[in-house]
Amino acid sequence: MHESDALTFAVNAAYINDIGDSDNLETTIAGTLGSNNVVDHVGGWAVGSVASFGPFTLIAEYVAATDEFAANEVAFRGAGAKPEAWQVEAAYTFTVLEKETTFALFYQGTDEALAVGQPEERYMVGLSMALTEYVGIALEWAHDEDYGTADGGTGESADTLTAQLAIGF
Image (tube, rainbow, N blue to C red; front, side, top):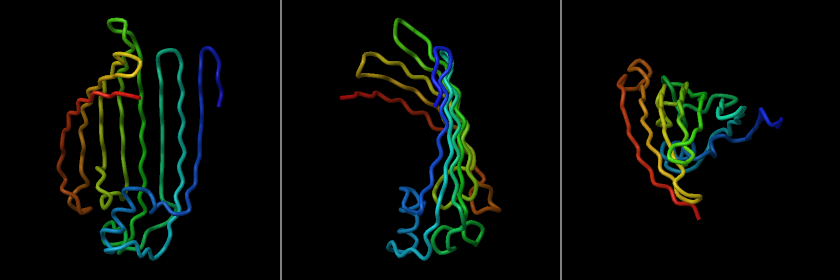
């Protein structure tokens, strides 16, 4: 991590010996097998970075399985899947009515993650405002593109609009 008055920058890396223990994959495997009788433990790794300079923040993240799952646990195109996902986010923080406000753009993508219920691509736009130290509001629009029919998906897209009132305590 590097911090100065003008720039904050951090890079992180992680390894997990069984990525199947993560929430979405664990639910998928248990649902497929009717229990958690895992055939093979598949490792996973992740890297990420965040950079802030002035009112701008950039975030990039990547996570992937180190090997294929057994086809009866997490499948893709009839074989064992080797899922991966990534995200890039750019945010700008400014003041509106004396309240800290953030506008953000996101791009997320996955590969071989259809069985986990993730879209192949997602584009998002978000706007949030801190009303008080403990209360905030946010509005977010997301556009998802599903995997194509050749991959077992629908080939369709979907849009979601989310409004949130958050109270911290």
